[in-house]
Image (cartoon, rainbow over all chains, first blue to last red; front, side, top):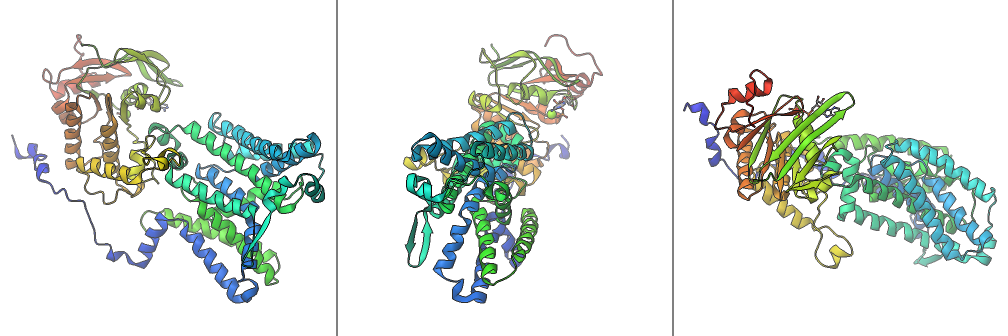
Amino acid sequence: MSQTDNYESVVSSADSKIATFDESGKGFVGRFHDVLHKTPSMVPLIVLLASILIFGLALGSRFFSPFALTLILQQVQIVGVLAAAQTLIILTAGIDLSVGAIAVLCSVVMGKLTFDYGVPPALSVLLGLIAGTGIGGISGWLVSRLKLPPFIVTLGMWQIVLAVNYLLSANETIRAQDIEAEARFLQFLGVKFSVAGATFNLGVVLMIALVFILAYALRSTAWGRHVYAVGDDPEAAALSGVNVHRTFMSVYMLTGFICALAGWVMIGRFGSVSPSATTGVIGNIQAITAVVIGGVSLFGGRGSIVGAFFGALIVGVFELGLRMAGANPQWTFLLIGVLIIGAVAVDQWIRKVSA
Amino acid sequence: MEPILKARGLVKRYGKVTAIDQADFDLMPGEILAVIGDNGAGKSSMIKAVSGAVVPDAGKIWLEGREINFRSPIDAREAGIETVYQQLAMSPALSIADNMFMGRELRKPGVRGSLLRQLDKPAMQAFARQKLNDLGLSTIQNINQAVESLSGGQRQGVAVARAAAFGSKVVILDEPTAALGVKESRKVLELIQDVRARGIPIILISHNMPHVFEIADRIHVHRLGKRLCVIDPKDYTMSDAVAFMTGAIEAPKAA
Ligand SMILES: Nc1ncnc2c1ncn2[C@@H]1O[C@H](COP(=O)(O)OP(=O)(O)OP(=O)(O)O)[C@@H](O)[C@H]1O
Ligand SMILES: [Mg+2]
């Protein structure tokens, strides 16, 4: 046998040590990039802390107080909950334009059932949550089974849900005094309590608990891994043994459920049930803004719920800070626009495996 | 002897393209069956039909004598058939360990696993590391690195390690060494023989004739969407096999 025929035999004496390389040559930017690649929520956290610091220095104790900082939490509670819902859909490489509309409709369902049909408030809330889950289920089925683009499905669902909301409520608001007198449980999430000058309400507690639970589920359960896999590459996920349909359905139904929770949070926050609340029209864009600023990739499969939460807080800090500084509100929109574009640019940079 | 995996009259059409045309297929217990054929002959389509990745338009499949109707790759996996697809099927942003255990994750013992459904990441990582070492994939530095940061050959190695680790009845490998280096290809061939030594039969699709002739017990020659013939590598040369599969020579009648 000639020598070339046997070239594979030396393999048996090959080196079997696990390769290691000297990392010192990477430099600060390289190592920073590595950290961001592993923990994408670092970027919004840094932006959040920096903006709190800047407003704190500029505005002093007026801004940098337990009262003001917890006011931000109260102001972002609805968008924060909607952003949690939106994150789940965006992780599967979708987008949900109907989140705000579902929230408003579910708040109307809760109010309507209690006031027009005499359903006990707790049961009305439960039925409202079921309604949200069901709407999410319809969208999920259209996306997963009929393979319709999520953008189109939820664009249609947004209009449908808003229309149903107006038809069902006859565009009538249920007044806060009436709810307070007859069905206080509907306002349950508005219950406030103070800790050392900081004011919280149960809606804020719910938002924070939701972020913790979803972060755990996405990180540490098989379901979470499947959500990321489906968002990354649904065909590969199916071939490697993920039930893609079930994953999509669970994500859309859970999203609908969380939107309904946001509807309940709205009743607590406003006291009343209003079918024409602006959340129905701009809630989707507010949630998408928070998610994008939070570093969740619109291409799916990358990002975290904690990042989206930071994104919502960043928007809240800008809104309150600039208002306290007496700036024209247009500055808030301008800066948020800059943040959105900046966040996507950073996302593209992080996604590069080698900096 | 009865085939462990048998198919008769499989048909699959994609619009006007016929990918599988009345194909038959037999895998005997404990053997390494190589499948060879030109590009586009329909090899991948046929193994996808037996692994649940595509549902054939017609035809029947039996596993250990029982007729099966896989609706998805999950069904096939539950039946013990593990496949490395030509396009590899991995989630680029997830880690090696996540990918190896996709769809069959290990949970922590006790309440944390049963109630909180918490994943046992250390156990999965240790297992994945062990399997990669078995394959000699020592150039992979970190078991938690994202699959997208691996080279094409390293990815292939991970996919092969996954199939070999979990296959209990049949392991199907669609061109598992196409992107691999000399050393890694050799390791995959050794691994295939290890799997056979555990009594598990293997279907190996490959264009590498020396490898096919070295390890296959029988060679299934696929041409124009169907089985042309099955030959014993001891009775024919590589040039004979290439001649059959390209249609240069009439194939032997008795399969
Ligand atoms: N998803 C699909 N849609 C349309 N046509 C397809 C699809 N998959 C395969 N085909 C067609 O079926 C035929 C067989 O393809 P297949 O991938 O099975 O070939 P193969 O033998 O595995 O080839 P190769 O050696 O190149 O991997 C080809 O003509 C191909 O174009
Ligand atoms: Mg192929």
